[in-house]
Image (cartoon, rainbow, N blue to C red; front, side, top):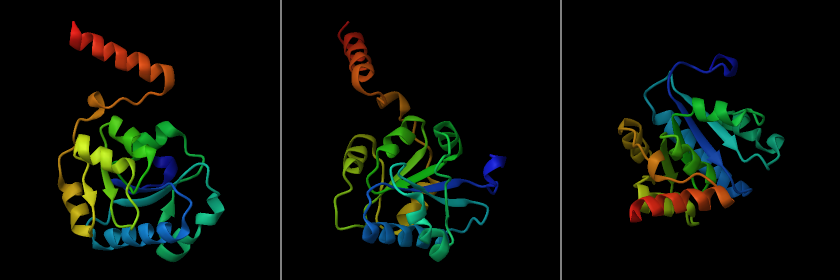
Length: 171
């Protein structure tokens, strides 16, 4: 999208969720290593911080690693439209991106469990990224059509959608 001044290549986004600066630094360092090892200079490497976080507290990412933050007020449809590959340790947005049939990798480089990333790996074969070569495999892989298998609804909408699927399978 022109309004975000992006290069013509793929958009690779690191999603940071938990407010843990030590882990954030490790994740950003790993993301920076992926960027350095990545041979395609037309691709965009960006960081998305959780909307509940203070945007100003994350400016160090650009200052130290020269990786830009996505605008904190970027509309959700814009984000979904631009992202090609999402990398996250544990983030609800990973399932949302999968729903729209985008590539997702779960960064399994911290001492903590990747949380819901374990389930995404177990049920949808979303790859764990433990080293930069794992990222290269994700980049070169075919996009999986997962959206039809994944419910991205909440509360009563989720309950209704799940009941409809069950009824169709029974009948």
